[in-house]
Structure formats: structure tokens, C-alpha cells
Image (tube, rainbow, N blue to C red; front, side, top):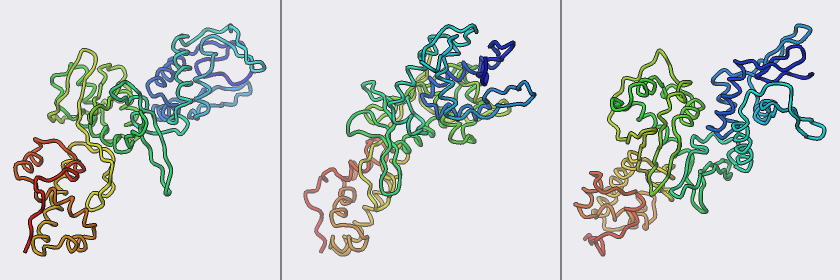
Length: 377
């Protein structure tokens, strides 16, 4: 046969003969696509793990191929029926059994074709989204979040979308996920199976670039469920999936405390998060969308500090308009912060101690116990 030989086969006496090492690489690529659900991510994975296109020598002794696999070449590889022992007639697009040996199970090939078709209608595939949880994030009803992009005012915003009118901003969610997985890898793993703990402690996520972190999280995290302002992670215990990320000369000696549930085939992590629909430009510009507990607590402290500054000036001058002018905000904003400044002490203690979990937006919007604020003479 003529043409370039496909990865996975050598041409010997004009016949396709399986190359066992390359065949294993092809199977890895097909299996990895089912994990990543993205040709872009799979192409990045191939670059990171030094997987190259087929290299061969022509009859004239010229070496060809052997470069990184381009995105379009990866598309063709994943759709090539030659790997299941078939030959495609490009003239009429019909297939026939080939004389060569298949190197992929038909079931695996068909699963990849179904995933490719499904993702063809998914904006995450057409836009090449780098989101960490592509294909992994679900809501409490089991609906998978897809990736969405919106463009405006000179910038592009990326979101996770599952149901109408409900979005999770991808950058904030991804930041939370990276921190959570980093905390997990830094945790005390004495209760985990020794083999699993050893492998996890040899993963150096801190010094990984974003593409490597994405590949790791796509392998380590089986799924994440967003439910009632919680992210519920299911972490794999399949050590085979983690082998590509091990650094033999690295060991993580951190033994931080972290709560998680150890099951037979997975580990479950529950993390409280806070949704914010509005940005308050007084002190937290840009801190919109989704916050973890630590960032939310920092904003609450800043909110109380701002409220007490407003209160101090108000009790000196007795004029809300003057307070608003001094801090370059509206009178309505001052009144909202008075909800914190004149909050009952026991309620303040519950919030600042963490006994009461709430967001800045919720405590700014709730009605204060005082019907009117103190009159200052």
C-alpha cells in the first residue's frame, strides 16, 4: 500500500504489520481521550508526555515524520478505522475488512467515536477550552456542565453551564480546584493504602505548568458535583492512572490535616463554596463569582472593617451623605454597610468565629435588628 504509514504499524513487504510499542501508544491515546473529552487537551497531553507522530524511512533513505502530533492529525488518528482492522475507500466512503491485524478493541474505538460526536456539539471542543473540569463537573441532578464562552468589552469570559440562567465562572472554580487538590496532596495520608499514598506523595503539583495540572486533575478527579454551594470531589484510587505524573526523585513530606472520606474505590472530598452574583467595588473589586471558605472569610473581615470605618465617621458627623462623599460611594451603600456596623454582637461573633457560614452579599443585604440607626447629635 502507498502513503504514509499510520502510527502503530510498520510497512513490511507492502503489508501493515503491528508495531507493538506504537500500538500501546495508540491505545493510550484512545483511552486518554475518553478521560479528557477534548482533542486539544489530548494534543497537549501528547506533547507533555513526548508522544510523537509516526517516523519512518522512505525507500530512498529519507527519514520523515517523528514530530509532535498536530490537532488535526490527532482528529484523524482518533477516527481512523484502520486501527480496528478496516480499510476505508475514500472515493465512496465505504469500508471493507483489511488484511492487517487490528490493534484496538472495536468497543474502545466505538466509545471514542461516540464521545467525539457528543463533543462536536459541545462548545468546549470547538473553542478548545482549557477548563480544568471539562467533562467532569455535574450538578446535583446529574446534568453535566458544559463550557461556555461570552465575549464583550474586549475580553472573553469562560463559564461552566448546566441549566438555564445558572453559570459558574470557570477561572474561579478552577483556582479553587487547584488549591483543593494541592491541599489534598499535602495532607496526611497515613490512613490511605500505602501504595496509593506513596504514589500521591510523588506528585509535584506545585511545580507543574497549567497544562500538566489540567492533565493531572483530569486523571485524578473522577467527577465533581456542585450541590447547595458545595463542591463534592470523587478522587480515584486507581494508581495506574497516576503513573505518568510520578517524579521518582521527589517526595512530598507535608502532613497537613484535611478531612475526606475513604471508600473502597474512591476518596470523597467536600468543600464549602460561596456564590457571589454582584461585585462590590469598595474593597473587593474582581472578587466575584465563586469563593472558597478562606477567601470568603477574608472578604467578610474586610467588609466589617469597612463598615466600622463608616460607622466611626457617621457617629462623628451624623450625616450619611457626608460619609458617602468621603468614601466615594452612594448613600445606599453606606446604609448596607450599617447592617454590619450595627449588627448584634452575638451575631457578629458567630460570623467571625465561623459558627455561622454566610457570604458577604447575604449579610450586606439582610435587614438589621435595628429599625433605625442611632441618631447622632
